[in-house]
Image: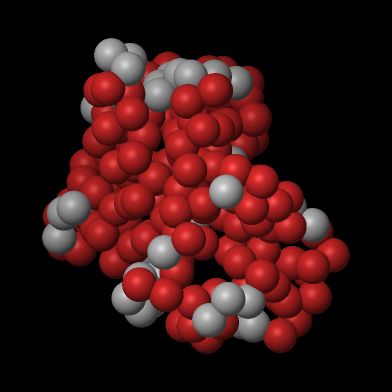
Length: 203
């Protein structure tokens, strides 16, 4: 059984397999249906398109590489093994982020590991956000970048999470609302407060 599970994960990591599928399967619903009937190409595409995003998202919740990797692997093994029992999924990114979030937090509680939105560790993280250039004046880039970094640390955990999901994972507000278990209107309000806080702290 373990051999089978590892084989599935290894197959998902074959880039040329996923690249071929990307030209054929473009819609989430179609991709998910192909996956449910056992298409390893569809599974590889889902894995390739989401594994890096999940890994990065995991670090916003838990500062534990081993636990994050284990939860990601467990998640993909579980969805493969239960693919025929899963319902239709309209937004695959949102489904995986929500499932991963639940699994990672549960594992953290079980292992008595603190979970929270971690600090943004380096400059690369800041450059991931598409709103950065709208906030930073070119002539004061270094100073303003430092201000942005400091302002990000002052956000609440929920504010950090929604900024990560929106600007790094590039999820829609519908997807974000599903992941964070809030309404779409609530997601808009939370984002608005977060951006307003950043703007006021950088002025």
